[in-house]
Image 1 (cartoon, rainbow, N blue to C red):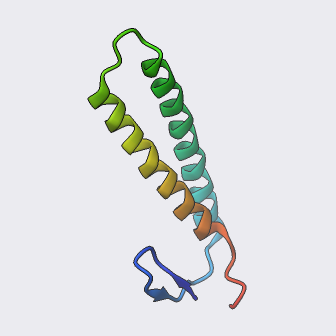
Image 2 (tube, rainbow, N blue to C red):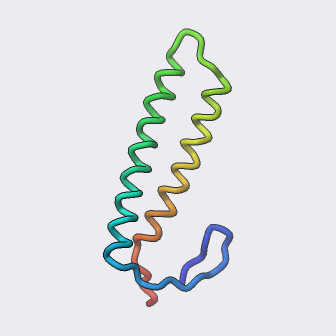
Length: 82
């Protein structure tokens, strides 16, 4: 039994191999996008006239991606109480 992001306990059914593969693929995509955003943010910060609004939006998106990555990673961890 696990808690979802709102703290409510949920019972998880074991994932199928197909679901595991799909989650791993999604995780790879999220990590790649997170790295890409990191590079874009770094480039923008070091530009002559960084757009602060764009920087804020990119950083917010990067934080959302980090949260999604953690959610997907937690789904891939087997439920030891099962």
